[in-house]
Length: 113
Image 1 (cartoon, rainbow, N blue to C red):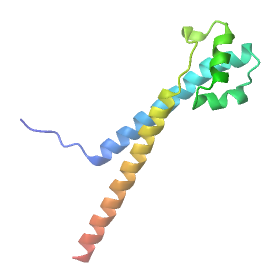
Image 2: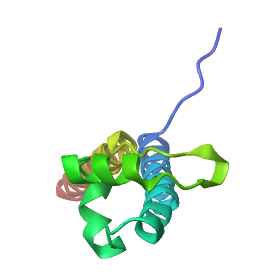
Image 3: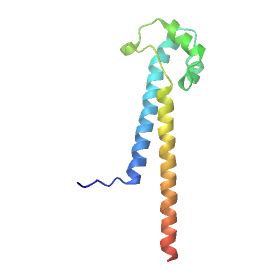
Image 4: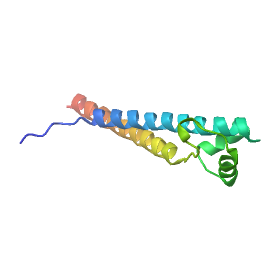
C-alpha cells in the first residue's frame, strides 16, 4: 500500500483556507443576527461589534430581547466559530513561517557546500 505524500505547503494553505472561511462564516453569522438585533432593539450595530469576539451579558440580553423574526430562524450567535477561524489562521501563518524559515535554511546550507 502506497502513501500519498502531502506537502507541507499544501497543509499550510489548507489551514489558511479553512481558517479564513471560518472567519467569513462567523462574520456573516454575526451580521445576520446582530443586523436584525440592531434594527429591533436599542443596541446599535457599532455597539454590537464586541459581540463578534465575546458574548457579554449585553450581547445576550440584546439577542434575547430582539423578538423579531430572523432569517433562517437563527436567533443566537456564538463567538466560538470566530475564535476557531482565528486559531486556524494563526496556525497556518505559523506553519507557513516555519516552512519558509526551514526552506531558507536549507537553501543556505546548499549554497555553503
